[in-house]
Length: 169
Ligand code: NI
Image (cartoon, rainbow, N blue to C red; front, side, top):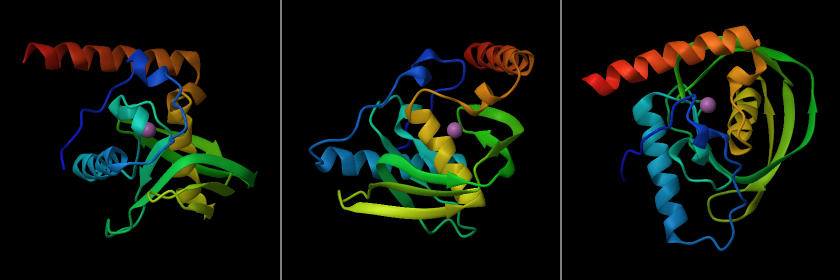
């Protein structure tokens, strides 16, 4: 397994739309293992393939306290959503930024597990938020897009400054 490089906002590659996974093979299993390792290493609770510059509809999530309940979902589709849940979201592609976002609290999502079997998940609150956040990545959307233009611009400036400092080190 290896740790993959995570793209950071405002990298334009985060705006690419992912395509559905077809013809599952070992390369996908390797990618899923690498994504899980990358997510755990970075201390995140979710990661979409888009964030590691692979534009396939694959996401991994682990919202458990013990970090021992990895979930992989491919080609996800939300089939129902209701309610509202507010959570201070963060993102491995937008480091050190946390903002309150309101999303549907209860969703049913359908997709494939890592072996290509169809699965349906009923998710509430944190898991629901996390799945929706990761699914947004797959269509090139980031949680900062829900904020005001002014706030998003401030975050962009802050991260660009951080990236300049990092590249000088
Ligand atoms: Ni994210």
